[in-house]
Image 1 (tube, helix red, strand yellow):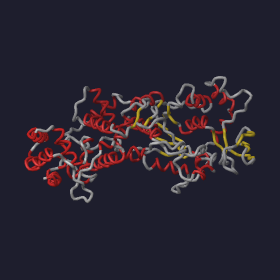
Image 2 (cartoon, one colour):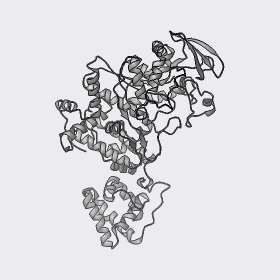
Image 3 (cartoon, one colour):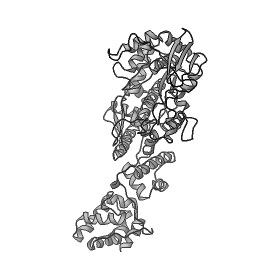
Length: 548
């Protein structure tokens, strides 16, 4: 276990002033461009068309990090997360049950599609709940806005009226970045609104006429129904998303919202939304940045909710504790593409986080003050609570922890009890790390990394086949080394085992192979002397006795 010192509040404040982290730099940009305000609204959102994957989570946590940076400057911040659950259900994901039922609801608003798992009130709500229950685990607590509810309450009647009254101007905004082949033709009537038919619920509708105020007539091409709707009372009218987005920026007074690189392409949806916001709704587009995609190591291609090919936040939390999940994003600039790994790179991820933690607590010395300030701020933003923990976590190298867990057959409490210097306020975090490590071992780790300690009392125990010379060495280890093992440090213990092999005239590797076969039924395993220390004298004697 490492010793540590607590940084002074003055040093913490100095770190924030240095603006060493991209979130702090973004917060400063928001304040600089929008001024000193009573409230700063930061926004994120998604259509719950399928499982919300870890790529979508990048936007959520990117906003959360900027929100925290603004709050650290004493600003009052509103973090809104919009569920675009009044969007159209266009495609049935392969990972949802009762595909035929879902197929029958194509072209419905997502909020009117049934949850075929039977758990929640709708298909949309199912995916919303999956996220809302998980975000608190990583310290994210936005205010949720449900767009189906807001449209049906006619909250956007004025915004839709403005859009309808400025159809030609919006058409020009949408065409401004398009080449001639993709422009809306001059003689084609443009409608910023769409409707879900009030009879059949499908979006297979076309606008017929507008009275210049709140009256809008549409016709359904599926069932033939024609409706005279009133924007102030009708429930089925909504804006197309390229207009809906900037309308809501103005409605919510949004000052910051990032977007993926597909939306931030030159002349893309963010650029056209900026024009609509400025020219139609008289509201400047929010401060923004582009965030890149996330890959999963070993999984080719981009994640897709509609195809059911996703890794979700709970999947990642199975392998990494919440603070390391946050660290993956806090320690990477948003416009950098990276992959989340579930293979042996997991070990390095834990090591990198632990190194940052030791620097933040002054256990390891940083190369210089700038490196220290950056590592400290990354660590601070990686914590679930918006403050430094009361103490440093209890650190054990991840590989060593895996060896401890496997030696104890996954008994986490036995591993916790074996750490004599752990402090009461460190136990819960350490227990979480153990749970993640055991999950990784049993579900993700390569086969050659896994092992189970043999137990002579088990009915499945099979005695290893060991050569005559190797067997003599095992007997010597049992009779000469194990009795004094507790008195030996790792290096002298290793030298003693080597000495037994040398005296017997065999290669040390041959003895190691035989020992691993006896202990874990494999030719190799963790570094032997260290492994023997983990197993302990009592259990080693019990196993070796079978061969003596």
